[in-house]
Amino acid sequence: MKNRRLIQLMKSAVAVLLLGLGIVFVSCKKDSIPVKTPVGVTTDHHQTAVTQFVTAGGTKFAYRVLGDKPGIPLVMLSPLGSSMDDWDPAITNGLAQKYKVIIFDIQGVGTSGGTTPDNIPDMAKGIASFIKALGYSKVNLMGFSMGSFISQQIVLTEPGLVNKIILTGTGPKGSQGLSNLPNILASAAGLSPEQVFLASFFASSAASQSAGKSAYERVQERQVDRDTPLSGESFTAEVKAVLGWAQPYPDALKELQSVTQPVLIAQGQEDILVPVVNAINMSKSLPNARLTVYPDAGHAAFFQYHDDFVQKAIEFLGK
Image 1 (cartoon, one colour):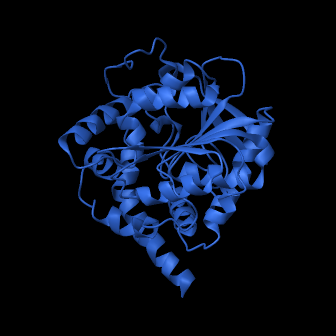
Image 2 (tube, helix red, strand yellow):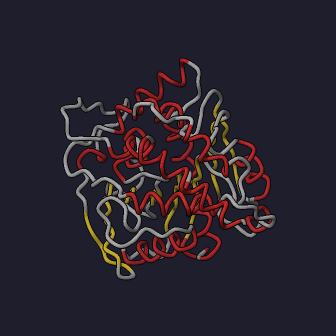
């Protein structure tokens, strides 16, 4: 019965994703959109970084390196339905001023080859292989939503590979409210791509919606060498992976007590996809964690408060 329910939830979510949220992430075309470098950022790495490839575990991974700073790099793990084109340049460029930033596509997504895994553990294995293929024995991880789930899995299974972790839009295995994802997405049916983006990632207030519109424009700035759209098969696999992570797991918080690496958690007070209570519970269970809860902000709170988040992230990574 449990597996049957999971399949039903997955099918419902995929139907909406393909019609709504998926369009948000793959609708970024090479139109003439003005390039707006974020305030205080002097180099637009996000706009100009060249797509490179490396083969790991039989998969050809597509990635981009932003900046050339020495030291431990920051590897950024994307959310469900997203490719490396879908990060907010205000975040990637801001971080790249101080650290080497690596963005990439998981198996079967965007320009990467292979087949997208339908579970978080296999995604984590693939990404660990990708990191090692780049020649790194230790990295910092930053995950957003599904990317934060994968980051947790990596630090649990390969702790020696991880130096520090940044988690956003996050929750542990069995997160409260996460299994409601199909219903939340279904409520967005019929909305435009921008409306889905705003409803899913930002709070309902005028201020948060305005910040969301600005973020939506920034996400679409890169016009050359963009990723290819995600396939329906990849969407299906990713949704199944997220809903698998949402299944009840009584030992989730206890498991996180074994994570000794420093962890920075940034969450929106009004996150409807992964409610803030999950981040609060995680911060109490992780031995070396700090939590920032942004008011009047949703799932992509760090897009809305990008200047503050970048400053906190740089300070966190620098200590």
